[in-house]
Every structure is written in structure tokens, then in C-alpha cells.
Image (cartoon, rainbow, N blue to C red; front, side, top):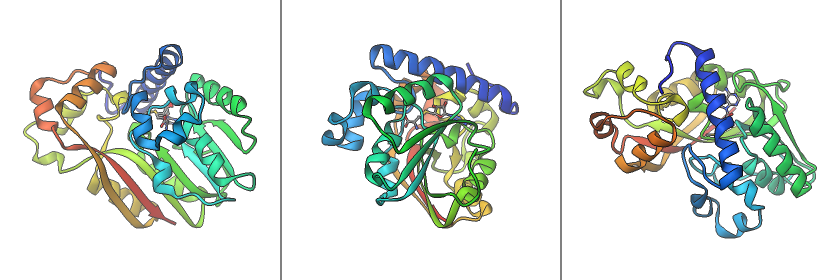
Length: 274
Ligand SMILES: C[S@@+](CC[C@H](N)C(=O)[O-])C[C@H]1O[C@@H](n2cnc3c(N)ncnc32)[C@H](O)[C@@H]1O
């Protein structure tokens, strides 16, 4: 079901409900529903990394890339993961920054936070904390973070400008953003259907309906104050991928819309510096 595009509260409620259900299904049967499936985690993170993690942590993953490969974390860094879900990237980051570093995960969905905290306990991770909150209003002080990571989340926020502005606020000078996200490659005005028609045909929670274009992402990062902005396509979604995601997210993609979108929806590695 699509959500009204102009109602941020309804969008967030639908996203929360979708991911609350998704994490329960994933921890129950090992499936995942957003932008990847659990079988893709080995390809994304590498076999050694994934086999060293408990199975529950891996199946509780819903990303569309590997933000740690983008971030290149260093020991001692303070990291914030926007939309940390079941905690996989927080727990991997915690190992990379070590005992002198610290990793915060931020998520608004209770079932995700419960899973992430349980996973942290299972691994005995002492340098992590999972915070409940909205990525549009990050519950951390100004200039308190070295690196912001995020995997397949910013597209879900109704107000991306607010997310990127608040990310800029909490980063220290010289701090960096390293994000994997769904991004539209091209201009929506070039499509044979209207933007509203397109976005309402897709479930917001499925990660495609809320995606910015590459141009919009650059503009919004620059408006937030970021420099050294980079966007690199890491994956292009073909019709079959889109159909699978639409089904998983209970979206409603007609064949006409699928053909319009073929290859234009991408996962991108997004980098920027404060
Ligand atoms: C596609 S999942 C990705 C989870 C995780 N990053 C991963 O790679 O597995 C999206 C996550 O973002 C969270 N989320 C979406 N919008 C949010 C918002 N406005 N504030 C906080 N969390 C949000 C959802 O609750 C969900 O856990």
C-alpha cells in the first residue's frame, strides 16, 4: 500500500510498522524484506566477517550496500549509525574502532532496538549504545561524532534536508558522512509518468518511493553545509529486483512503472565531509 506523500507522520508510522514486522519475520525465519536478503550479506561484507557474527545478527540486516566499506573507520573514532536496525553495522563498526572508540546506533522502531541490544549483549560489545529517536532530530550534542554511517535509511525519511542538516550539526569539524542509500539516477521530469504518480505507485517503506535523485542528494548535502560530496553507483536494480522489492514491501508496481524504472533505481555510496 502506498502512503500519502505529503503526510510525514503517516509515512513514519508506516515505516515503523513495516520494519517492526520485518524484524520479527527475520528473527523468526531468516528472511529480510527491504533492499537486500540475508544471503547477500556475505557478498556485501565478506565471508570471514559474516561467519564471525551470530546468525541472528546477520539475518536482522536490511541494507542496500556496505557503509563500513565507504567509511574506512579508524581505531578510536566515534561513529553514529542512522537507522541502525538490528545492529549489524554498529557491531561490525565497534570492532573496527576498538575499545577506545564508540558506536551509537539510532532507530525509531522498538523491535529493531530490542533486537540490536540483544545482539550487542550476545557479542559482549561494551563500546556501543542503541538510542531511540528520529534521524530528523538526532539525540546527540553538537560536534560529538567523527563519522556518520547509514545503510538504506535516509530515503525513508520524509525530510532529508532535516536529516542531513542534523547530521552536519553532530559531526565534528573534519568529520565525514559515509552512507549507502537508494538513489534515482536521472531526472524524474524526463519520465513518461508524473513524479506523484510514480511515487504513489510504490510503497515508501520499500525504499524506492522516497529516493532522491543524484542531483537532489548533492544539492541537499551542499545546502546542509557539506563539502567533498561524492555519489557512486554500487548497484543498479533491474525489473526483477524491483518486482521482488515491491512484493516484499506490499507495493503496487504496474508493468508500465517497472519498465520506466528499469536500471534507474540504484544503490549509491555517498560521501561528504564537514
Ligand atoms: C531498511 S532498514 C535498514 C536497517 C539497517 N541500517 C541495516 O542495514 O540493516 C531501515 C531502518 O531505518 C529505521 N528508520 C527509518 N526511518 C527512520 C527515522 N526517521 N528515524 C529513525 N529510524 C528510522 C527503521 O526503523 C529501520 O530499522
